[in-house]
Amino acid sequence: MKVLITRPRAQTNEFADKLREAGFEPIYFPVIEIQPVENNIELQNAFNNIHQCDWIVFTSVNAVDIVLKISVPSVFSVVRIAAIGPKTADALRKHNIEPDFIPEEYIAEAILPGLGDLRGKWVLLPRAEIAREELPEAIVRAGGTAHEIVVYRTLPAEIDLDGLNALKSGVDVVTFTSASTVENFVALTRQHKLDPLTLPNNPLVACIGPITEQAARDAGFQNIVTAKEYTTEGLIQIIGHSVGRVASALCERIETNK
Image: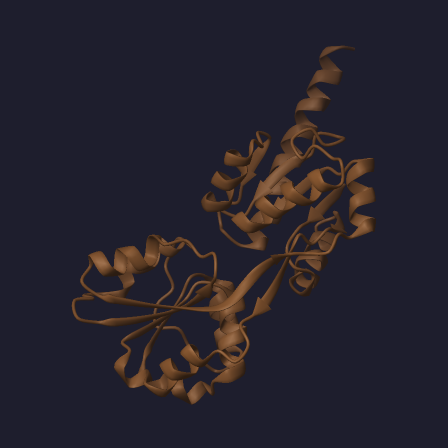
């Protein structure tokens, strides 16, 4: 069973390995690339004045990796750290930084309750250029200051011809791990004369979480399942469950028609 991976190629290896372990065939079709902001003076100034900050909130592994390239872990000892989920927390732990808070639901809005009383507090948000505004807006409503700094941009990837050919032949599942993967997948497939909503083999669309699911629905996708745990492991679980359910229904239909 072929499962299309649309996330950046640099982030595919672990996901692909786990798909293989689960009995699936990963197909690489990255639709976005991550480009760090170079010579990020605003970010450097923020770390030079880190003592003024009460929290740093990381909402992606990308933000952790980019920020830690220009800052030393000891800087974080004077500020509390929140991570959106286990993958982001693990990225911090690789630098011996233990997050102070990880929400039970891995979306930005769920972080706010764990930050406590934000009146008069300063919250640093190193983020993507196209990051959603729900979290900074909520911080401001709670009386805090949300200091957003763009640390990376999400750009369309160069087309992967092998992945494109696999799409034309038919895959069984298309995975989306962010709203930007949905948007760029739609754009790339249309550029190459494919209708993303009527692909060969009518693949299942597997989304990592509700924000990505909503982006997929807004784009017109219908055959959608969403991970209960918003991680790649959760994606594999929901794919396996959905595939098993379809196989069982097919077997029942065959038995009925005998």
